Length: 338
Image 1 (cartoon, rainbow, N blue to C red):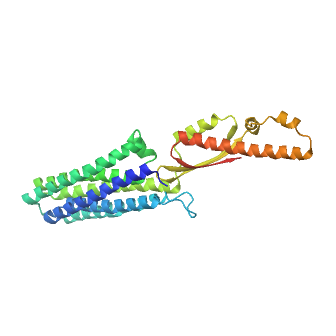
Image 2 (image 1 turned 90 degrees about the horizontal axis):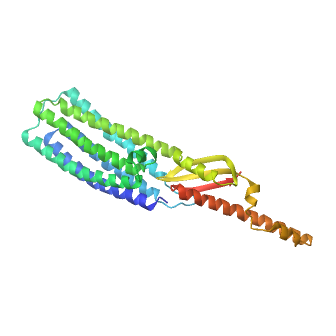
Image 3 (image 1 turned 135 degrees about the horizontal axis):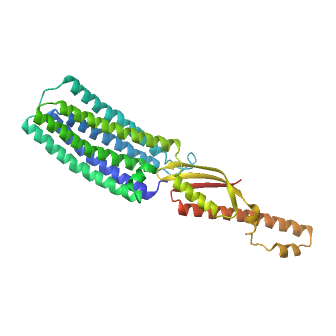
C-alpha cells in the first residue's frame, strides 16, 4: 500500500484544491457573464479544468490505495500515474486548447466591445477573491510539498515527486499567475480601449497551461514506463554492498517505481562462499571427531547443509534490512545469489 503520510497529505491538498477551484470557477463564470471578458472566460475554463483534473487525481490516489492481491502482488500504486497522466492530458486539451482557441478567435475577430466601469471593477473584485482562494490552496500544497521534500523543493520536483501533489502545486501556481495575467490584460484593454490586450492575456494563460501539461505528461510517462532509483540512491546502495566482505560483486540490478515514492529492487549478487561459510556457528573439528558411523556422517551433512541455508537466509534478510534503513523508499527487495 501507499505510505499513509504520503497519501493523506496528497489527498488533503487535492480536496482543498477541488473545493477552492469550484468556488473560484463559479465566481469567474459570473464575472464573465457580466463583462464578456476573454481573459475572464479563459480563467473560468482554467478553473474548470483544475476541478476536473484534480478530481481525477483524487480518484487515482484512492485507486492506488488498494491492497496487493493475487492479481497485483506489488499493489496498485502505478494506477495513480495513469490517472495523473489522464489529468495532464486534460489540462492540455481542455485548459490549454480551449483557452488558446478563444484567444486566437478574439484576435481574429478584433472585438471592439469594452468593459463598462462597473463591470471592470466587478471583474477586479472577482479576481481578488479568486487570488485569495487560490493563494490559500497553493499555500496548503506548498506546505505539504515542503514536508515531503525534506530539503530543496526544486530537487524534489526534479527527482522523485508525488505526481498528484506536484500537479496541484503547479496548477495552483499557474492559477495565481493566470489571475495576474488576466488582470493585466483586462486593465490594459479597459484603459487603452484596445481589446487586443485582453486577447493577449488569454493566449498567455493558455500557453502557461500548455507548458505545465507537457511537464506533467513527461513526469507520469517516466513513472509509468518504470523510472529507477536516483544516482545518489544507487551510490548509497553500492556503498552498502562494498561494506559486505561476503559479496564479490553485482551481476544484475534493476529498480523501478511501483507507486508514488515507492520502488521495487531486484539484485543478483555474486557471493564469496568461502568468506560466508566462516560465519557458520559450528565447530567442524569437534563435529568430525564425533562421527562414528555412516548414519552419523549423513546426519552431520544434513545439519551442515541446513545451517548453511539458514545462514544464507539470515545474510540476505540482514542485507535487505541495511538497504531499507539507508534507502527509505524501497518497498520490495528481491535478492538472489548468483
